[in-house]
Amino acid sequence: MSEGLKVAVVGATGMVGAEMLRVLEQRAFPVRELVPVASARSAGKTVRFKGAEHTVVEIAPEVFEGVDLALFSAGGATSREWAPIAASKGALVVDNSSAFRADPEVPLIVPEVNPEAAADRPKGIIANPNCSTIQMVVALKPLHDEARLKRVVVATYQAISGAGAQAVAAFEAQEVATSRGDEVEKEKLSGQLSRNLLMHWKPDSDTGYQEEELKMVSETRKIFGDPSIGVSPTAVRVPVVTAHSEAVTVETHAPLTAARARQLLEKAQGVVLVDDLSEGRYPQPIDAAGQDAVYVGRIRDDVGNPGGIQMWVVSDNLRKGAALNAVQIAEKVLIK
Ligand SMILES: NC(=O)c1ccc[n+]([C@@H]2O[C@H](COP(=O)([O-])OP(=O)(O)OC[C@H]3O[C@@H](n4cnc5c(N)ncnc54)[C@H](OP(=O)(O)O)[C@@H]3O)[C@@H](O)[C@H]2O)c1
Image 1 (tube, rainbow, N blue to C red):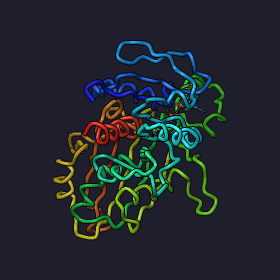
Image 2: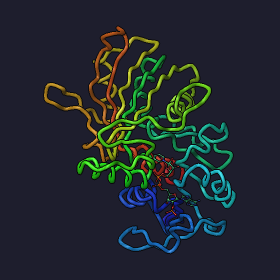
Image 3: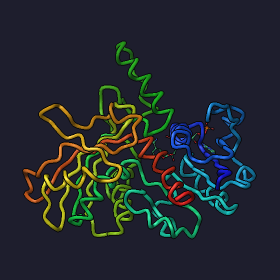
């Protein structure tokens, strides 16, 4: 252990991969050797880690030889094909894609919520939940422990970086075009996000929901180990580059007040309260970007549904929503 670990970052040239490298460095994760992996498109490029340039290699079975930890963030298809290969060579795989989240043999972990579930990983793979789910369950955890969740109604306000580097570039081009009064290129984002909102994740033909919304339902239930929790989501893409925001309405089996929720959240792991509207203090994506915490504020007794509460939850989708959560999982399993 003192010699450190050989760590492969698959998707090292992407938005989450770049954040992964930053998080590994900032948390002084014991990396003995870094293997940055991407597709043939980026092979030969370099990424910076701990003050040195590291050459990106194209994904292939041999890149996983001797790897202790493989952090995957290169999309579902890449994970489906390559995560089992990495695991078969002995690596602990932490996967950021949706490929394995619903697999009963793959634990879905948020370290502040269900770290114990990581011990049982028959495939050698642990899944990182969807970014919107992660920040919501961190805020819900102390409320669930106290009063047991009955129903959660959530509307997300999701940043464009959640859709990857190319989407951010397309959004920034739209911002320039709208500021100049030029015609906006809409194809890359399936619409205009600049000065607008979008809901364009893949629709589910059976339910009329978007896949992004359905993930919040199934993942929340799996993480809490309680299929009876009602989850009613609406996912919206907003013209913000980094940090997702969520309006969360909560109903519990036992009585819960806003005052008690505030007490619980104040000492909850991973949560920072920012809750003083009279002073203009509430969580905002611009403050959460680049930070590790899940910020919670606007905690209110639900005026339209006595006994319930409402809150506003904001966190950096690339950090707690992806890279940080993945590295925290690896720390729990490999370092303790
Ligand atoms: N962005 C978020 O907030 C967020 C949050 C949670 C989970 N995720 C998940 O994390 C993954 C990556 O997201 P991202 O936002 O970082 O996307 P991105 O910026 O588009 O980056 C994609 C990365 O995957 C690599 N890649 C693509 N196809 C590959 C292949 N066939 N073989 C090897 N590498 C390949 C790319 O390498 P090249 O440079 O070679 O193209 C790049 O490094 C996705 O599964 C996403 O759902 C993202």
